[in-house]
Length: 299
Image (tube, rainbow, N blue to C red; front, side, top):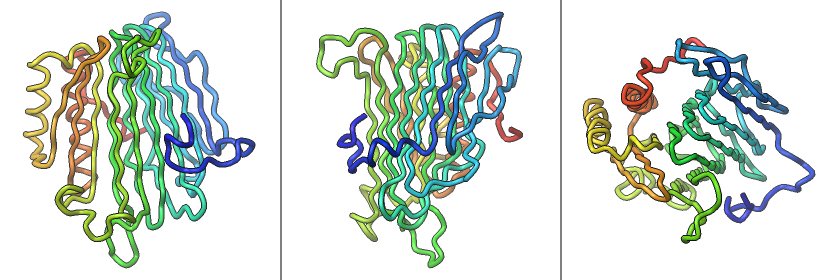
């Protein structure tokens, strides 16, 4: 991932990331086990949990400092063939004032054949004068399953002014694993590029064509062959409708043999979007693994 793709001038390479973690899990003895766990700097991994009898392992990422002020962090996660992993965060990611360089998070998630990966971090909160860049690459085998749910919210401002952060830029690329196809894009299945730049829009940030009067944004991406079924797409739409999400849309697609579904929603609270992420996740689990609703609150 180049500095130009992130839209800012990178820090000197010698500085290195403020936090980095590398996690690899594999299927062994009837359940998913850690193969490699490494973490340095401001990122830590809690001990693994098994939340049910499915054999799926859950890891929680912890940032002891609780916030970013302009650092760069990186995650490399690998789910080996047949394994199943839930990756979450202990608390919200808070981005405070970044006067010199933007805070950056880069992540590469690789999901092998027949494997499943669920990434459900707590919300990202951008406070006054915060500039944040997030670049995520999801590399999947054609028969893998992945679920990514994210929530973005503006932080509290002492003067009560909305959208006082500088910018939030979030890019998510999905690629198919294996040799790059000869067609244009080199294995790129889909790309989601979100740019919320209040500094450039000003008071019109919440208006039509931008945030439609909302303050919070949520996204859910589901990858897997099951997302191509009409019944599945209709079921996700029913979940969205039942939650009263009037400013939400469901999009589907397929490329290079990989099918996907995305839900994008605007709301006025984190709770509403949290219900959306976990509601769609519950439906997805019922349609695929048969697991019960994901509950991470006590961890």
